[in-house]
Length: 312
Length: 236
Image (cartoon, rainbow over all chains, first blue to last red; front, side, top):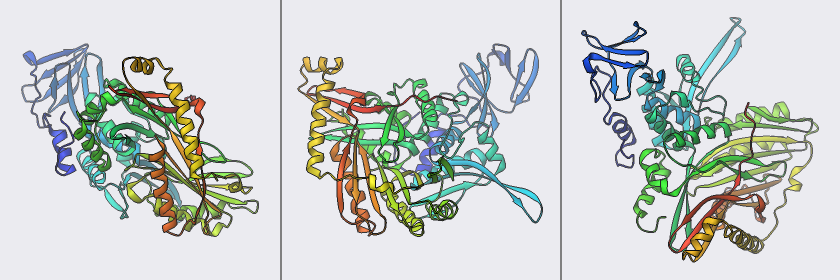
């Protein structure tokens, strides 16, 4: 996957990123063919059918048919709709999130919400429920990204409102609410769970990009003429942050341990949690994870400019 | 709104989360004050926690009010201020106290005292990190200097005609960056008429708890970052 440091509109870069080298779900196959029209994964078998598309069978019984699919060396992936895919491999089958949906999940986990509330309507005597999935940001680029991802996954355009310094994008849909609730994208106002079991390599990268865009931080440490950078992820949700750190470990990064950022108060001490990415992994982080947040992108550009000079 | 803790003398509510709009904060403050302010309530503490994305520094603003009617407009004005510069806001909350807690919030050192305490802290930490095997090895191989970046909390007390007291805190990896973040907030509070003069500062630290987060060894020097270790939490 290429870098996100290129120029151009964020929306276009998002399109470039997700379409890069990826076959469209139009019946076009990926890099591999099924040898003899059949591929075996443990007790599952994927067979190309003469009318087009694929059949998935388990123990000789057809359990699914698909108009399109992507054949990778170690797996076959079928689209299921709403940014969800079925992965068939030697480990069995599992539902995985398309990168667009994974990134949307990361954005919502950091700066969004997915909730409902019900009220009793005295006139009708019935309960009326409202479902909302939302994202708020002061960064126009991030709001554009949220819209693009939502359109790509759910084919719905979020509504907007807010002020000059912060916009909110929202969708009121019971279907979307339950779809995202099923994977525990946001379990409370500032609690989240990383759907690690539904993320493949590309999904993990995309989730981290979305999350870092909201809750990532790049700080500059100056000492004389020398400049060093710290790339950190913050959250008030310790358990969620552990999940984020696990994704970095899965991708072969070596994030430091989680630490406390203590805030001083007379009545009690308030804590946020954080971990950092080691300096030697910053170039890889910028290219493989990166961020759509404009402040982060400026700093990444500085970091790349300084690379090979005084940037340690 | 969510309860953080509730006792007979104190109620604490978060009234704003990252997915909310800034204008939600006033309405929720009004509602909370209307429902929760009792005859026994002596003071309201409101807080905003955030991060200055340009500097990469954390911050907190706390204001104390003894009159319930000023709380909604105060929280709205502070929110507006905290959101400037594309800052990330983590949360906003209100806490009602059965005593005047602001009297205990005293940060009255001058900057010379803070600088002296910081220099002393840096000396202690530098000597301590030199005992780390990776640092001592780098020094034995020719690195000349050790630079320490430790989580640095500076708390500043401000006079205010709007509130009983305003306290601002900034958190970054070293004093200059922390002060840059703090000064921006203090200047803005004064420019908007929310705060008057600075009463004083304090460098908050707990040196014994700081641990090494990262070590970078260059040809000439060794850079060491120190943070507070996370307390273990029981997972349900």
